[in-house]
Length: 149
Image 1 (tube, rainbow, N blue to C red):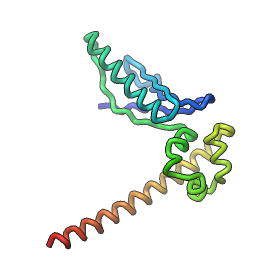
Image 2 (image 1 turned 90 degrees about the vertical axis):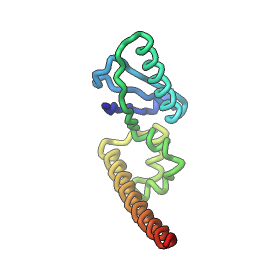
Image 3 (image 1 turned 60 degrees about the vertical axis):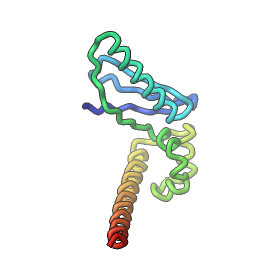
Image 4 (image 1 turned 180 degrees about the horizontal axis):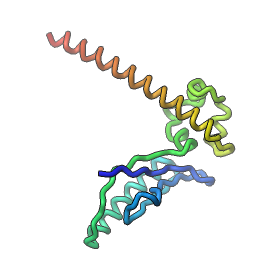
């Protein structure tokens, strides 16, 4: 099964859109929208299922794909704001919380260099978290094995 990227973007009006790029060589396209990124993703998935059902009703072949959602930077920051504070993100990236807030609000747009800096910092943080989780799992398994004896 092919994986198709779905882009999530925040519009100037504050709503979110989810869409497939035109270069995926599929005989269908799907879009979704909502007041939040989560609503746009849910709408996108519902539309995908509707198109799938339509193709089946018409007797047309439907290529199922795996969906990989990608966010623009402001949408990503808003979507994960409950988990990563501006202060925490500022500490990770070296970019001030005030500047990050302006990106999220749409007042300013980050340069490609700044976007890459944020992405690199978040990737490094994710790797660190994964490493810490793997270590914790090993310790827990050892304790369980010791307890079971």
